[in-house]
Length: 88
Image 1 (cartoon, rainbow, N blue to C red):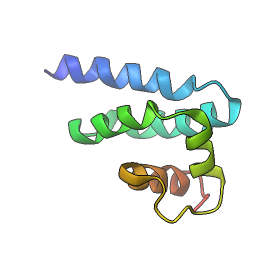
Image 2 (cartoon, one colour):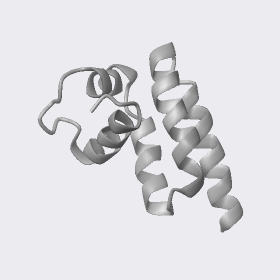
Image 3 (cartoon, rainbow, N blue to C red):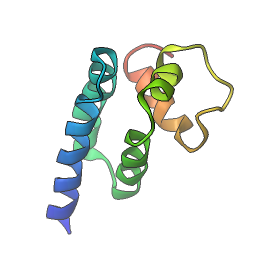
Image 4 (cartoon, one colour):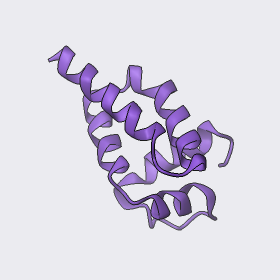
């Protein structure tokens, strides 16, 4: 089980750092590098779903004005990333 979660963490780290735009590679990738090692399985699962969201949506959530809850189930992930980078 622990090996499985480590594989998932490595895969998520790679996906986070290779989003397709330099801005998101840095924002999401650096957050993942710092937080994934200690992330619990449930949080990892939510982060994996977050990584499946399109780049334009993630970029709007992270770099745009607060969206009043448009992030839905990812509101806490978005808030954590924004706070991590001093964008909150």
